[in-house]
Image (cartoon, rainbow, N blue to C red; front, side, top):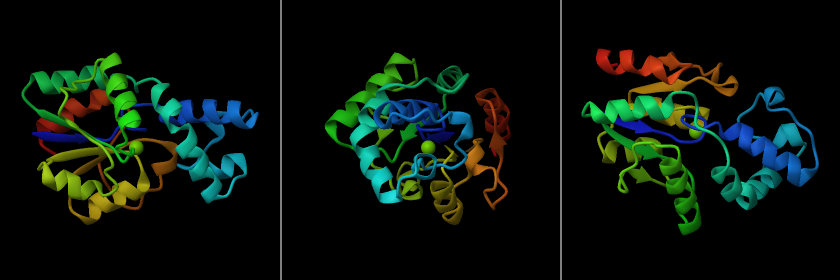
Length: 187
Ligand SMILES: [Mg+2]
């Protein structure tokens, strides 16, 4: 199987890192448990435009910090060892510094990154998934989930508070260990 894997919110607890960095910079004390939306503008009382501008400024640090989601690295390594092909497909911008922190983070946390299987700047994940013939995609963000569904890419939702009301019925995991069964079933 060719497996496409998003990074932020899919194999990495990016929300927690983002809240920590925003709290420090904005001198606030927002708790990650209280953030119910994908974007942070409401939690910090910013306009979407202000929030996205601030994100651009802080993203390198946010991507550098933060821990993998539980069992993600272990499971993806096992799948790679069993002959599956893994592509990390992220909408993070492909600038040199962002690519570097992304690669370093994948290596640091022992993900099956081989120097070639990282696709950045993937605003249209369905398009990228088709290019490398992904059989199964793992994603958390509602906008990307919607695009993947519309383009008939078999997709699994990585559970998060902000995607629980996603309107299409797709397989959902709350722990990466649930992936073995899905991959064996060929979902
Ligand atoms: Mg994501």
